[in-house]
Length: 483
Image 1 (cartoon, rainbow, N blue to C red):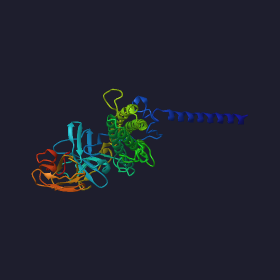
Image 2 (cartoon, helix red, strand yellow):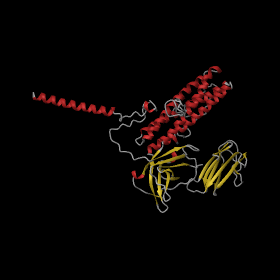
Image 3 (cartoon, rainbow, N blue to C red):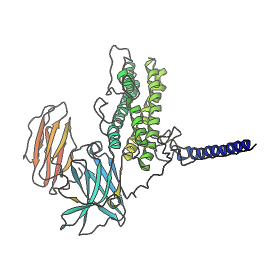
């Protein structure tokens, strides 16, 4: 009898332990903070599968407070500009200067001094005069303070991308070995979407001219931009034409296509251990607009296929108009809720919205340096790179950019990227390239501050009419104004 009682007590105890375990497990798994719905309907973003569940059974350290942000953006070329905004007590007085730097493992460049806009806010915008992709080159931003009598620069704020995050962001926004022209997936997607819109406009023009042959030619162009390496003779004229780069928007052959490649990298970034809440937010925005893009490209492909199946002008009319509207929405997005904004929500954001929010996703938060480690950096710790050469393109009938500002002592290299002969000739005859054929270059150094007007002798005049340009040379050696 005693044995039976002991067995019953042991069994009851085991049941209580098992029940407690099941309850605690259920509480963890069903907790609203365990696997947050990053794309809940109430968020106004997307009802698709969440990108980056952040569940953990272990406590995580509280991150240092963020008091600033670097954001990448475009001025003349891709990611050639940054804006830094500081929201916090950065002292600004005549005895101290707060300098912003971009750096990588071996070099740094000086962006300039923070400009206070209020007692609690300072900002700086910088554009590289060399039109380089800054995101491809640098992964760290920091702010130093020093006086004219100090031998060291004291770091007061810093932000840095970890190695894996930087690699994913660079493939997404700067450079990828997987694409034909080694462009990042998002710039490649944007370029191909704009090319699609261009040929949709050609398609409509050919249709309006009642030219079925050219309507079908441009329809083939659109199909092949979408399907990349799976390009085909869609208009059955005996040749295959693809004005795209061949990587495609949708999966094709061995190519993932720009849409899937973008999705994969956005999801990887959102799940990265170092991802901030801001990065996850903009990753959700980017993914929503990628989903919009996938839907529009699929509809566009079906629409253009129908155009290729008929030669009847009346039959194809509706599809031609629809193809143009879809292509415009693909690039620009659409204000479906009529709130005067194109937002990164289902049915609205297009490729331009996608591109901007991908750049915002790559923003680098700045943290007070004392919250990381107390340290100083000597002025000789990293070599300083001052831009000393600027590259400008000569297109047919235009200099790009037409006006640029550089520091004295810098050099400009012009390259004829057009098909016609051109010259770079000073209006005051102080320099002259003579005739430049395609791919020829001309180099000119500017040592004295001033404004230098120049023109092409074939397509412009010394007074600035037609094909002409301007070089503004300043005497600031360390801080080069934005072109």
